[in-house]
Structures are given as structure tokens and as C-alpha cells.
Length: 244
Image 1: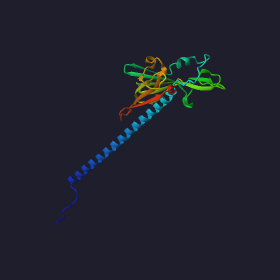
Image 2: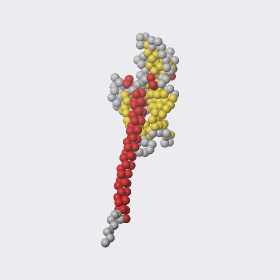
Image 3: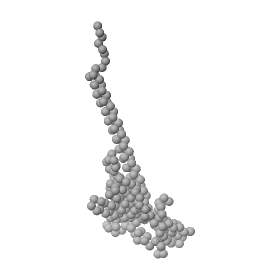
Image 4: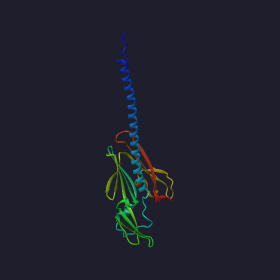
């Protein structure tokens, strides 16, 4: 009597293949999901790093706005444009043409370090004789204290979604993928530090620029690959020489 052959039949083999494919697809889906999560987290972290870099740099400059020393420059200053510029040490102007919005934040700030580049002006002060002169560019003199002053311009370009910075006439990209930028000025009463209101037009609605106590900056960044939703970052910087 012949023994019956044992083994897998066609149906059993097809079922095994189908189960294997289901398991493989499940594992593949988990892998793809984990990879997308990893890429999204990296994109979110990159946006946070870009925002932190841009905002920290702007805050550093804003804190030194209007720091022109403790004496008034004398009439013999060679930088005649400094007197006019120093009257508005901070301003923010927005221009909208159609769907294109350009925001320009201009700061007159004391140089925050050797890496600041060539200063726009240099205030030379003599603490003993209570004298000061202002010269364009870098300047030094024996027995005088030199305070570099820079005009720093931050420009939001909505067309190319970039935040640009201009120092000493040289413009460079500070951060890309910026979809929105907002600047608000914290306004207080003269002689106090309390913030009573916020405005974006200090040159128009504020008759006394000394009332500006702080600056609130808002940046919205996006991921060019669309892995995560746009994120908005805020920071408030107090103007140092306006504190009591």
C-alpha cells in the first residue's frame, strides 16, 4: 500500500504568502511612520533653532538701542547725520503692495562686540572734561573712550520669505522660510516702566519716543518640505537704557 505524500499544498502556500505580505506591510508601515516622525521632529527642531538664532540676535541689538553714552556730542562732530539719526534710534515701517509685504526694523545700537563689523559712527568721550565728538566709521584717540555705534536694519522680504540684515551697507540673509513677521512697541508713561499699550508706529502715534519700553517680535517660520505646520515664535526685549 503506497504511503500518502505529505507537504504544503497550493492553498496552504498561498495563505502563508498572504500572511507574510500582511506582516511585511505592517512592519513597512511602522518603519515609514517612524521615519516621517523623525523627519518632522528634525524639521521642527531646525525651525526652532533658526527662530532662536534670529530672535536672540535681534534681542541683543534691541537691548542696546539708544546707548549713546552719558554726554552730548559737541557741535564740532564730523558725523552731522548722527544727530538726526539719533532722534529716532528705533523704528519699524511696513509697506504692502498687493500681496507683497515688506517690513523694515531700523536700530541705532551700541556695538555689542568685536564681531559687529565696522561701526557706522564712533562716539569719542572725555569723562574728565565732559566732552564728546562723533565721527563716521571706526575712530580712536588717546585719552578718549570710544563707543562704536551701528545702524542695523532688519528687513522682512515676504516675496522670498526671508529675514535680511544690513550692517555697514552689507546685506545678508539672517534666516529663510519666514512667512510672517510682526513688531510691536511696548509704550509706558514717561518715568515709569509699566507697559500701558502696544503699537507698531512709534513715529506717528507716539509723540515721545522715550516712552518706548520694550519691543515684541513675532516670527512665523515654515518647513519648505511641508513636513510640519508653520510655527510662530515670540520674544519681548526691554530697551536697557529705558529702565529706571
